[in-house]
Image 1 (spheres, rainbow over the protein chains, first blue to last red):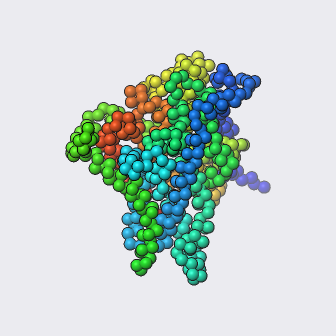
Image 2 (image 1 turned 30 degrees about the horizontal axis):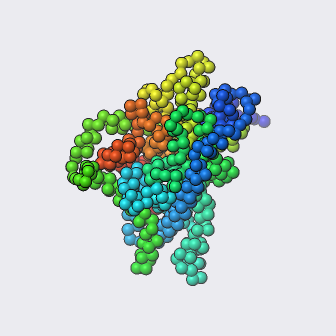
Image 3 (image 1 turned 120 degrees about the vertical axis):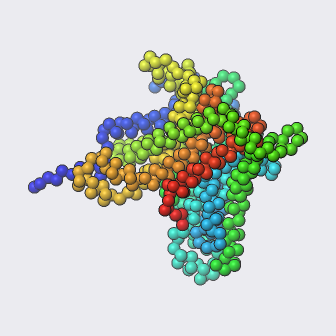
Length: 279
Length: 290
């Protein structure tokens, strides 16, 4: 019997041992900041750069961090802001995405171009003028004010438009025959078909706005509306001396909700980012 | 196209269009207008000054340094993040023990707030007690004042940016890799092609659309991502690590020079328009979003 020497390594995605070791080392390096934060936060200050497996554990840094800044209030603000933004985005993007996918109208090309403009000119770039607008509206330092520039999202409109465009027209027609109005069709036919896309968009949007900093920094002045990120920036710059273990503990408090959600819904997160990227 | 249909279309579009007009289109146009006016001073309303702000801009050494810094920042972080992202994607797409954990490790920076982890990076970079200098110390190398030395401040920021971005871009490569046609690889195997050859001849060309997509996004981010500056360097020392968006922020909200901030934002809009032209006019030719 003749043995055919086929180089299968490329087909099976085989990796050499050297590559595997590099992949692990890189993974370790990428986790370093987080691992270090855990180390410093749970050990007494004298062990911060002294890595000893037998070092005693402590929660004192968490107590002092919690007392140093109103984390509960910041977290509540972030939660409310993120919810307001996501809620409005879902409604606005669904309506606009549906029109652009299924109702032909005059000026469609122009509207599409105007929407897509926001992909390039993000609200971050226009902080100066948007601050002026918010001041005119008397909405500085409010939850809604932090959310306003993000409520219509070009990315969301585009994503839903692509999704709605491939919903079978027959389903639409059938619902029409049964006497559904346009909005009923949208709600009963299109929205259920796009469930995974909504999940994907929601996860991307939540992680974006949970982590957003520059615009909230500009429009918030007090604890009443300040989100976690802005609170962290203030927390990290104390008047006198830097208490590293406490900062690490504070950082962990700040990232823990999102990190926990990420670990639990890891698969959905990764798939959501993938799905959002392909469209 | 009947009338009610037209009406419905516009009614449903209205909320989104109003918000976009209020917070994207109008402010963009206002920015251009304000760049031709000066600041209101003590009761005197702002007046038209023609190109004066732009003349100031051309003579502003800090502006040129910031623009140069930003160019440098993009030239280093964009290719580095793309190369790393692709390498990561190929690794976690391959047969790797503990692949789920490694993928998780690469992706984690994406879900962490830049501002919070910047505090931890600050500790890495701190002289005397910082982790990096400690590690250098084990090898008998003198510590570096990472964020205080003008030569190292910007590269230190770049390192954190690459760390933040590579895992995010990896996801797009991973999605693309999993969608590639297996039969091409089987054919390559029969031809006895080596892995590098397969990568060069099949994987890389097929991934081109993904690479272009990531390239544009990474370029935009190079102008948008300034959160870590607030914690790590505040643009210093002496503007050595200042970037355009941070300089806009400083002018508007620290120096209260909104006219100059508008002028700088105009430059930013021109840069973004060029990027848009690059994407839709040059790179995406033939691809239609319909």
